[in-house]
Image (tube, rainbow over all chains, first blue to last red; front, side, top):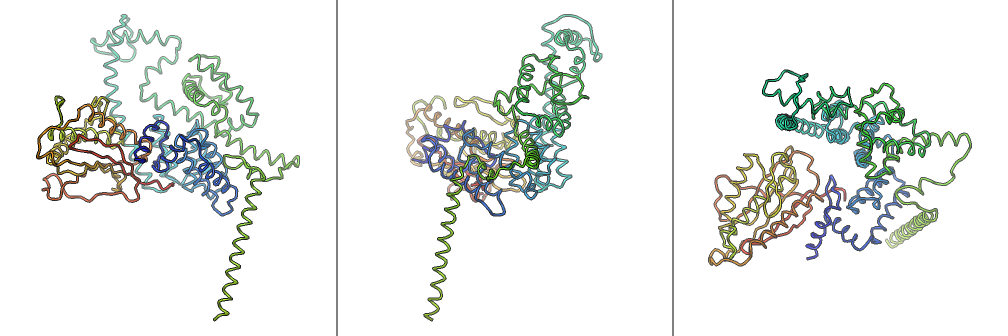
Length: 432
Length: 202
């Protein structure tokens, strides 16, 4: 009967359980949900503390292992995710901790952590490009699969495909998995094209009568010569179209050309071009200056974009951020960015201010700067800062010292017991 | 069937249960993405909207199975129905939806209808299908293209029809099992369960 209750429990909470790629262990889920009702129990806290300690005290040659286990445990223990799980922070720290460790760069565990981290970012594509630039996961099939999925999610199947090509070229492992996903993608794209072609046909049929209902006769057939039956509806279509588009002269033509499918394709592509130029130079520079100011400068921009869809004045203020002089003054790039921004700001303004990627880059710079500073001013933190701030919680010196003491004690005990053993042995031999 | 307010007969029960499987299997195929979502269309059944396949071949196959199943339900010779989901490439079993059917064989002798309202049964069926839908919260993502297979466990002495063949149980090793709700028509009782590959992360 208890089991049956547990079942009801997961079903009731289904909206608050984040689905995991690998699924959930049902026992862990039951446990987590029952604990949730009672409030966080000391058992969970103890376990968490144990992981935190292990992160700090580990001195083997595979420190990633602890992080990996800790994160997986968190995922299963906090089914609803959220802030109290500290997963985002933990992922970020884990990922950053080993950016310099070349030996982990193509470790599947580390790459998986990166992919999980990427999913929490507001700009996953940038992160993937960053990973590629750093050579993280470039030999792992999962990296290319995740990257390609991200493109596919945005409807850019061409880029999604080329990511797979890239992966195949690099000889990522396991190859058969990569090929399998590549094939699946191609199959999906084919099917999509078939359906969209059908849709387009039905769209045309649908949209033309609609325009006809707002009839206004104006003969103005630019696009192509059409049969007389169609002419009435076509010209009316133009009249309507012109009314809408009149303020935006130049984009009028492009609008005619763009079909749904192409639009989807072209938008991310432009985004891609833009950000290829951006991350190495613009973003890095911008972050070198004080991040506080930067956030202040950005927020009003965003709101202006949000309010007025096609407003020429915000464009100049926006462009310095991208630092791209050769960017054509078309409306499209603006259209993408505000959309992305508004969605993100609605979810979590904190992300907007400082994306994890930015923080990552910032941290690297910060470290460089710090080193320079240390060289210059001779300032140096003479305590193990790393140990205090590892993981998601902060440790005090006393806690660390207590743990060291405990370790020493247990070592002494072990030594004592082994000594006792060794004493016994000669005793036994004496008997013989 | 809708007229049977006065009670449930064996024939009616067999039909009800067979119908449940028809919708249940369709739901699983849709929810787990075994067939593309575009090939399903929405229908209203049991006071909720469900997805039914429009793929002619699949439709045909399922109708055949359900018709056969109905016969067996009527004879009270069926014990289990299992939907096995396997990876297309490796043939590895990834998920196993098992429906245990308990038949009350006394219903074959006495034809007196049982008392249970249609509404109550539908309510139970609805909660089973709801739960099937809700399982996405813990089931692993099926990342690769998958195929499905239907297994039916019957009484031993049953003759195997032409379209059916004997098969292994296709179990998953190292599986995680979750019991789902059950429903009963008082003649047939259906217990459902899903098994999936255990996550190696724990």
